[in-house]
Amino acid sequence: MNIDKSEINIEKKSNKDKICESILELIIKGKINSGDKISIKEMSEISNMSNTPVREALSNLEELGLFKKIPYKGYKVREFDLSEIEEILQTRSALESFATKLCSKRINKSKKEKLEEIQRIGKKHIQSEDNLKDYSMYNLEFHRTIIKFSNNNYLAKIYKKIEYQIFLFSSRLFVDIDVARRSFKEHDDILNEIINGSEYEARRKIEEHILKSLKNKESLER
Image 1 (cartoon, helix red, strand yellow):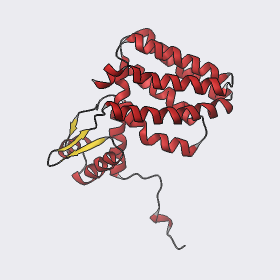
Image 2: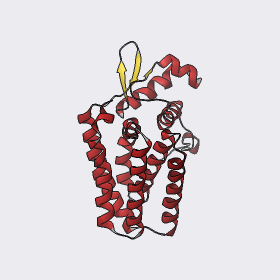
Image 3: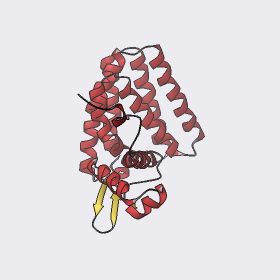
C-alpha cells in the first residue's frame, strides 16, 4: 500500500463524533431524557458548530435507536414502551449474565479492588439519600465494569449498542431510596459471588437482579 502518514491521524475526531460523544455524555448525566426534543439549530448554537456535523451526529444517534426524527422539527429522544423495555432487559440479562460468568472466572486483585471502589461510591450515594441521579450513574458504572472485566471485546461491542438505551429508561427504576437500597444490596451479593469465583451463583444473581426490573411496571410505564 502507498499511503502517506499525513493521510491518517487516528487521534483526531471529526466534529460529528465530538457532538455524538457530548450528547451521549448528557444522556448519562441525565441532562437529556426520554421525550426531550432537540433541534439542529439549537444543538449547533450549544456546540458552537455548523449544522452539518450536528445533523450527521443526530442521524447516527437515530441509527443507535436513541433519537427519532420529526419531519421539519428536528429530533426527539426515544421513548420506550413496555414491550421494548422488556426485550432490551432480556437482551441485557443474557449479555450481562455471561459477562458475569467470565468476570468471576477472570477476577484478580486489581479488578476486585476496582469493583470494591465502585461499591464504596454507591454506598455514599445511598447514605446521602439526596440525589438518585448520582445513584443511577453509579449503577451504570457497576454494570459497565462487569462487562469490561469479562475481557471479551465482542461482547462489550454488542453491549455498547444497547447501553445508552438502557440508561434512558433505567433511571426511572429508582423511584425512591428504598428501591436504590435494594439494588445496592443485590450488587453487594453479586460482587461477593464474583470475588469468590462462584460463576454459577454470580450469573444467577445478576439475571434475577436485571429481570426484577420488569416487575416494577408502573415506574417503567411512566
